[in-house]
Length: 165
Image (tube, rainbow, N blue to C red; front, side, top):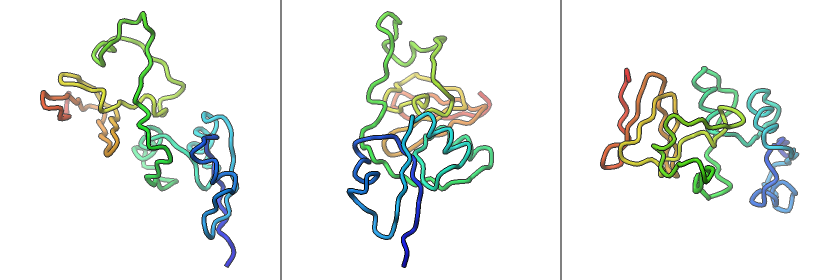
């Protein structure tokens, strides 16, 4: 039986190198790999559906689902087991030490769907509040706060979501 031919677009990372170079081969699958700037991969993969398999961000994927679009099936493949929000960078002169210090501040990201704009659950503390729409991710789950909802972290660390906030 001939191989299943798949196109794969991912960043050039050490943790996928063996698969993308062919050093490790998936049985019955022939992979044609495309590399490029991650911004291009995310835009072309998500908005133009150019490849069979593509690296993607949670924010952009959830946004498409909310619009009723489902051109791809997301599978929970985490090639890197490091939680990406183990560090959030701020300027040393910004006066930001806690998530609540971000209130009223401006932040910049290349696009809304960039996963770096998704809240890191382990960085939220008692009393922190988020107005939807927002996404909170942690290593084992994702919380979606819809437009018109407000989430608050209670004294026990639970996220309490209310509607009509």
